[in-house]
Length: 510
Image (tube, rainbow, N blue to C red):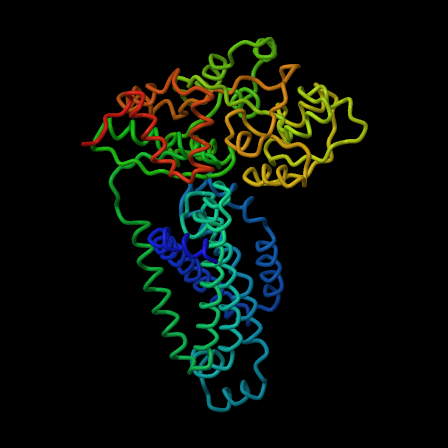
């Protein structure tokens, strides 16, 4: 509790900012869901043939995995709040529509006979009799939808949508359970408070309940909508994958860009997600730059020719090949940094010594398959687990884990093998060993800024500024910077700035 309280005190300003973002995001989604689902529920009363169909459609939409839905939306609507709100609206439609339809459909027929006896028109029946009677059931659906939205909105952090998910993701990536717990508790408390609030107002007169909910949703939601559509100055959006290393790199990009052009505003999107998210967002002009690796380009993103694949397998530098392949896609890869952040098969150092294991091929000597915890992306890549199976003939019992959790699982003995990168700070932190890739499965992975060719042509000063990192940063440098962020708790921005100043790439502010 003491650690949690200290984390709260240190992060209270950030927590408040993210809480407001989370509330705005949730209320915009709730407002849109209400505007769609309640009229549909009212309309369905006189269209019984379609009511069941609509219930099935909204039910099916709710079963779509949220991560998959966000991935599908990025190429269409981009990153940020827009895909997040669309996904949240999709999940909120079912409880609101279902309860609206059910509440109106199950009104005692005696009331409807009384409506006819008094000669009421259809609008009068709806407003004066039917909606008041159905309001407790409708508010129950709104309550369920609100709780669902607030909980699911944490995933907005994966696509740059902000909210409390940013705090949770940062805690996971920094292996800081108190920070993760702080974000999770804030989200849970917000959902509980909102559920309690709707439960309380459901006991009021229905006109008052509707007015209060409408004012609250329109107030916060309207402000958030205005912020989303209001004209903004041109900004350059720099995104990064999950983890401390991409966050350090994008902060370096930000510092170098702003030094090159003081009039440029840089917006960072750390912990954006997997490679496919970033690549799709870049190609669809939703982000401007992100750090990518040459090995990823030639092994995962694009398909080299047979001749090029043979050259890579023979140990040729993949950068020229990656650069050529990307240029055909209208993309440009900047100058690569010095360090090779290649994939690694990682085990505990003590276990490796006990079993005489120093290289990947040694694993074939073991009689029983090892239990492995692999990142989802590594597990599916040809230069990942598939390559280990084909090139080394080694099979594991695999559990796929989030990239930020796999080292913890290895350290606790829950798995015996995991994937990693040669610059990961956890190798040093947990006394691990990266096994030698003695059959050269993993290609060279040198990082470089990836951008659209058109962006590079229209921003030559910024491209030149980013290329200052070409040939810089050794593996030891990168592992040390990762260690400072993940273990020592320093901010990625401070670590990035310190490196740039130390190596004369950034002028120290006076």
